[in-house]
Amino acid sequence: MKPITVLLAEDHTIVREGLHRLLEVESDIEVIAEAQTGREAVQLAKKLSPAVVVMDIAMPVLNGLEALRQILKALPATRVLILSAHSDEAYIDQVMALGAAGYLIKQTSVQDLSKAIREVQKGNTFFSHSIFKRLNDHNRKSVMMNGKGQIKKRSLSLSSREVEVIQLIAEGSANKQIAGELNISIKTVEKHRQHLMEKLDIHDTAGLTRYAMAAGIIESSVQFTIR
Image (cartoon, rainbow, N blue to C red; front, side, top):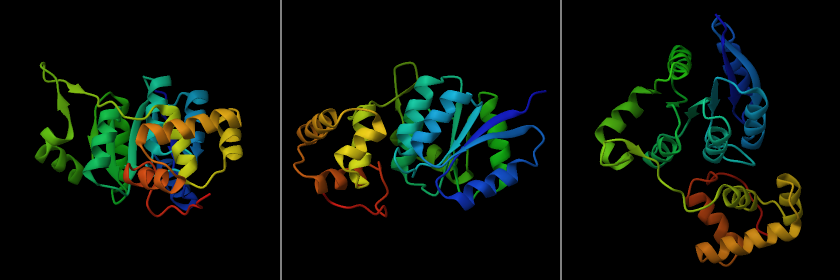
């Protein structure tokens, strides 16, 4: 039987390498690549088509939520398992709305992580006990149901490209850097920036940064420079 191929996406090297070493003892799981930014996670997922992506939410360049959305759009068969220090309902809600197969908090054991990878690869979902309990307790608040009792994904107010641009702005990147990262012209970056300000009714970079923090696009602890 072929092992379950896994892509690890985590920006902290010591955590990522530790997870790799812990998982490599499992005979039915194979870590085929590691990513330290959300952008790299998307690129590697598209290139390698892993069965499961284990990904943090707080990722530089492209956050885990947007990376999740882009990966599932490109690779519907790939299962994404969130492994995060965050257990806020807002994060859980967004992750489920975007189609994640499971959500684990970083305090979980490696046995649970291995089990989660196996379960989501089978098409099931898997949650840390505390997350599962919270979903049960607040199910009506966490998801929206249609008339047939199925989960409806919530639409996000920003497009995929707009999320990419606002994250890079909030992380302190200048227009030239954003253009290079996204492989678009500086003029296009300026148009995106202007459209974001008009759409959100925000009129400066500091305001865009505060919005990115409030929306969970970047962590409030991220260091940034106002330009």
